[in-house]
Image (cartoon, rainbow, N blue to C red; front, side):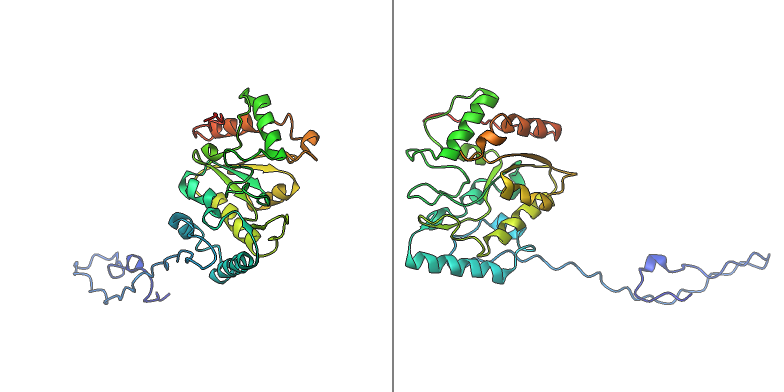
Length: 277
């Protein structure tokens, strides 16, 4: 059967047909010249652009998400948030929207802690799920998280709710919606953030390193479908909210579960201890 000229030249016959008769040996006929087509290189993935209305997402994340997030959809999120800020107060502040991504580069993610909506009270949200800056009263859900931390690992609750030390060790503190209107919980749902953070989860799941996903509450558990459970570990329970903490969060020992999973993966554990300044 004739070969296509586009096939690799290594598949072409180098010599003529072998003749087993005892005739004199002749030099093989010259093979016809073969035109080798250049191998097409895969197109470079374009990083997400910088868009008005949103602070710069770190370059490593813009590259990682470039093939998963449509540029037009990303621009729509930026336009929506900019419009919201023109008519009222939006949390977290503009420069803190991507604080979780700034603290935890994609190649350093060891665990993903999923929240839902940012805190919508003054001074609370600063870009990391569940976390508040020092000096800000600790919200009820975080009070319960810190209580479970003590029950699990024996670390006494600190006098603050700043969880940046977790983020700096590779825990991506990811809300599924990254902005909110002041005083109006869930006011930025359905505006594109869910698709963006779904892409983040899917990209981490497809990455080269095993990761532990911490899913508290049903909205977080619904993201399980985005995770390759054959490669990654999932730690899940009820949400730490006062409405549900006594229905499966307390006693779940999530922090030691995460570290045991990381040990199985051959990765360093998280030091969950939170020290007072």
